[in-house]
Length: 395
Image (cartoon, rainbow, N blue to C red; front, side):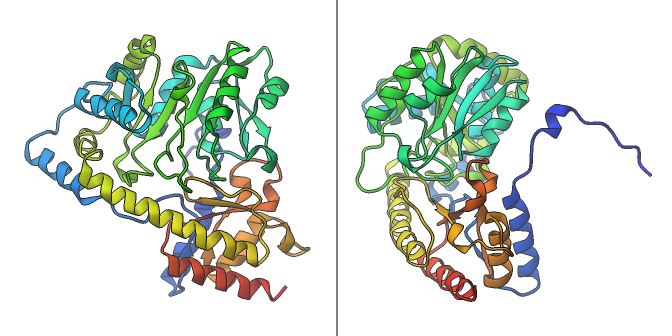
C-alpha cells in the first residue's frame, strides 16, 4: 500500500464542486448512449471569435513564444485601458492594469497583497464558491452573508453595517453575479462603496460578466464611483476565451510594484499566446461577433426564464446579466427528493438534463435552489424544459 501523505488543513478546507460530479455522471450516461442536455457548466458554448484565433496563430508564426513582462504586454494593458474609456468614459492609466492567468490569477494577487492572515472577507451567500477558498488559501476567512431577492442577492450597506467587525478587511461583490445573474446599479455601487469606506475597508468587484448585460441597461463599473476600488475581470465570459486562461485586474497605481512582485513569484506571467490573441479582442470585427452573441444570450434568457416559471420554478429577480437562472425548486421537494442536489441527480437520470445544485454556492437556503446555465441553443433549452416538466409531472 502506498504511504498516505498528510495534507494541510488549508487544503482540506477547500471543497469540490458538486456540479463536477453532475458533469461526470452526465458524461458516463452519454458514453452509454443517453442524450444529455448540459445546463450545468458556466462556459459559453460559442467558439472563440475567429479574429482572436487568427491573431494567436499569427503570433506563434511570428515566434512570440517567450515570457512577457510579469504584469503583461504593455500593448494589451493599453488596449484594456482604452476599453475603459470606450465603454465607461474613464481614463485609466495602463500601469493600473495587471494581466493574469484568468480572473482567478487576479484574485489570488489581490488577496495575497491585501488580505492579511486571520482577517475576514465579506461575500454573498449564494456566491461563487472559489472566492471563499481564495481567502482560505491566504490564511484568511470568508464570512458568507445571507442575501435574498430583497437586495437582488447582492450585498447592501445594511449588510456591511451588520456583518463588518474589527477583523473584517475586505468585501467582494460580483456584478453581474454568479449564480443569480443580478447586477448592482450605479447608485447601489455608490452606496456600497461609501459604507465600506466608512469602515476603512477594501472593496473588490468581480466584473467578469461585464459585456453580457441585457435590457438595454448601462452596466457601470465600480471605477465610475470609486477610483480606489479594485476590479477583477476576464476574457473568459464575454470574450469567449475560457480555455485561454487570461484575466486582469485594475488596481490603484500605488499597488503596481507589489502586484509585479507577487506575479513574478506566483506565476511569472500570463500565457504569451493568449495575450497576443487578446490584442484583437477589442477590434471591430471581434466586437461585432461578440455583440451578436450577447443578443443570443439575451434571447435565451427570455425563453428559458418564463418557461421555467411556467412549470413551477420560482425566480423572483429577473437577471440582467451573465447566463444563469437561480431558481427556487422547493415546490418539487418531497420525502424522496429532499433537496436541490437530489433534484439535480434525479433530473439527470430521469430527464437527461444536467443542472447545478444550489449547495455549490453556499448554505443560505441552498438546499431549496438549483442553477440553470443557458449556455446551449434555444431548441435544446426548450427541449430541456419539456423533459423536466415531463418527469416532474410524475410526482
